[in-house]
Image (cartoon, rainbow, N blue to C red; front, side, top):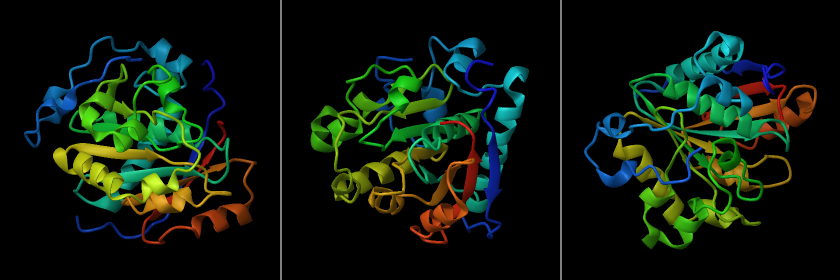
Length: 263
């Protein structure tokens, strides 16, 4: 399989108790606001074929990527068990650059979208080195998260894009920025995340965060998430580095560590 046959995600999630609870045009899912109707609104045109998904190193339902798909389904099952019945916001962050955080984030979002009763919204929060627009077929330079935070008059629906994958939408990073912490800690960012999560009860949000090592941005972003999944590069990140990375977050939010072979 092109680019994916070496990808292996090993689940190692903490057994804590569950809580109580590509496309160049915007998708336009936010045109209506009736709760519980997001799935009906998410019609998909130009869905990608399995071979196209494999070229982009994206999982799908066919047998050719069963091993990879099952790994992400296992992570999905554990996150749902930990969170209970509510939809939630999951931040996925690598210990260090090139550990495969973005790869895990988008495929985990796809695994949730496999369920016809759920929708996924992937938000690229790696403002220095955004990658999700390229992987999901949205043109570079397209308006995204930063553009909306700086100019909310453009409207949230203008930055939500179809992906060619049923029930999965993307908010790309938009314009690159060196200093992302000030955006993540802003009232507007928190309001955006709360609105996107609460608008539809079947929507699950995934924040593709920057590397933990060498920057406080991942810790700041974690304040907006219900759960944190840390991605360690298999054979790249040492046990000490992983432990140090996990210690950056509220222990009650850390769902666990995923060991990943893919950059």
